[in-house]
Length: 227
Image (cartoon, rainbow, N blue to C red):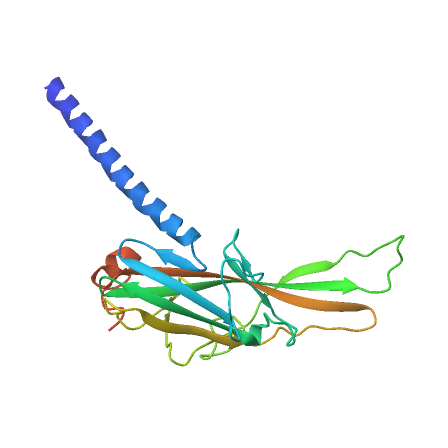
């Protein structure tokens, strides 16, 4: 009896180890993929190329407007004369999959307002004031709570998890170009004889793609979500 009980315990521990190991591999692979976001994401079944432009200038890993360490786009959010001005920004995705798939996208935005004081006493300098700023919801033409605009060809389904779910199945085979962001509004800044303000956006794009018939179990959402 003791031997049988011992065998059951060993078997249970072995199963737990296998389940944990499998889960760890999946989770690690997911975060490893996410850390490669920004330019190219590749797995065995999917390849996603993010195409970010300022007007006609493509942002690549060597661009001054891409921070490779954080995987973020650097956007000027106040000066229309700047090359990386928010109004010049467009973001699309070139998706190639060997299976029919579903896609969801999440923007992580950090809008930073910096105030620099002028004509300072060199003995008593005033440090720059830096603060994060936020937007209200501007309606269907905009990404929720953002000044960035969504293209009219992309009609996502938004949920409380912060993702914009692409409504259609992405067919397998040839590359599919999906437009997402087209421009945005500047953040209002103030400039006077006392101080000048600037605003910058650091934009982080998360892309999640799954096999179309597994979206419910992988994303833990209702099977009728897209109906």
